[in-house]
Image 1 (cartoon, rainbow, N blue to C red):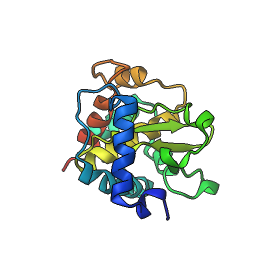
Image 2: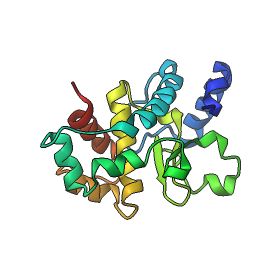
Image 3: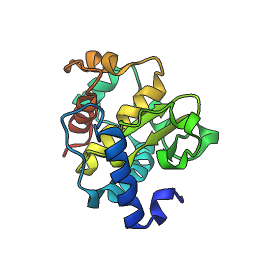
Length: 188
């Protein structure tokens, strides 16, 4: 799979990140997390692609904390397995780099300060790697799972998901969803 971030020159990426930090005050989902270091942004974008592929075989252990989370969210593991991947004919989800959306009109539909945003009409997950806070692969998997919850239940707001997972409800800081899913589903 070819994506815009695989062939980008590091200096161009840094300029884009600097511009994003200036334009958007570099707030990451309103969270208290600091962004991942610059050197990890491209690496994290590759992790997102791998996570999207790996989640095609996602199958939590019965009665595990992860299985309980999915039950609370009313989503089966088989539903999650049908969402990721790039085979749109089988319901796959596209990963779209925000920088690839050239139309300013379309770009305004996405939260410029978010790391990932699920977009139901296009069945895509749009990412803005300048806002990545994930520093390990399990956090990226948890984040991707968080966005897939939105695609599975488009009407589920972040505060609804937080409520169902029995974690602090804060619409301005939703990283705790990704962190809980990472901890419950992808920690060894």
